[in-house]
Image (cartoon, rainbow, N blue to C red):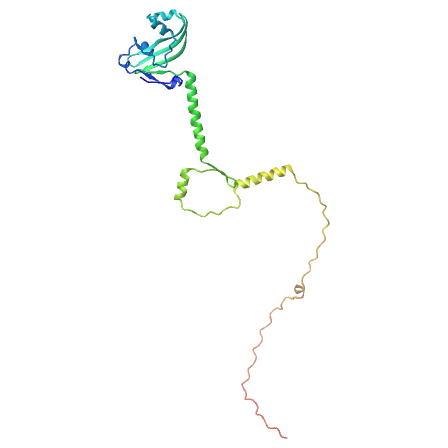
Length: 243
């Protein structure tokens, strides 16, 4: 027999009494459901009044209030019990459904609970995906935003390191500077003034003196005859002077 806290959500708990499981059948399943340890059973229902007065379940149609009925039975594994509010012998309002599978009692969720659970699961998955994506996001004032994944670190460790030439500015910085300059230009447009052109004075080209004195070289003349060579003569003898 399972012990449960009534303050818990009934959609997240179950109840079973192993002593009843081998003998469960459509005739005693409501008696099994009305056990005092069952958290799904309401002690103020009409079934409890009929049980105390030792009446049959047919008297439930003549009463007004909360009651439990066997809605569907698929022996020996499945039984469905409905909790409903009886207002007249022919008018009832369903409140909740419970299904018993192999002796274990569960509360069937309503449509709102199913949608809420699915939406919560989807939102949790999306939030987890965003949190994981944000863990790989990096930012630096000089580089801007970029993605940094774990497998990228392993590839960078295996990859041989190569020296990269550092640029004086990044693309992010250039774009930001261009944007700021464009905003300043729109706020403070430049003012243009018209200037009158003065008449141009003809400039006399004066050649340097070297260029003025130089003359073109004369054309080459006929070849000169080679000088005649004389035979070598001994030097004249020196004579003594008479005093």
